[in-house]
Length: 72
Image 1 (tube, rainbow, N blue to C red):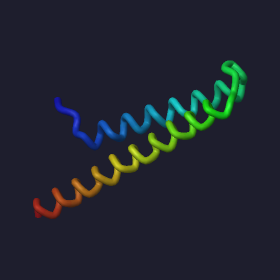
Image 2: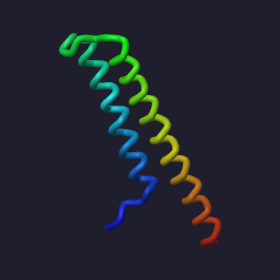
Image 3: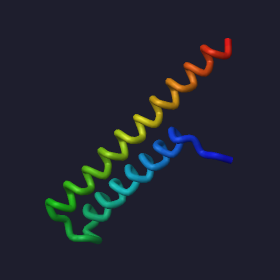
Image 4: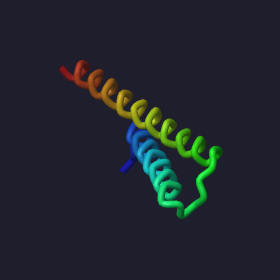
């Protein structure tokens, strides 16, 4: 079974969002020492995950809509 590119983008986006959240959570409970560069990195990971996930979602919706129009 082949995974579509859109589903892969959504999965990677979800992993990036989760990674950014975990990194921020570990800084809040002070398991890792918070600093400005790490905070910016966590924000960038979360933002990249959000953008990539939405790109995959919208691409999947557009592809499904075109497929439905051609089918009938």
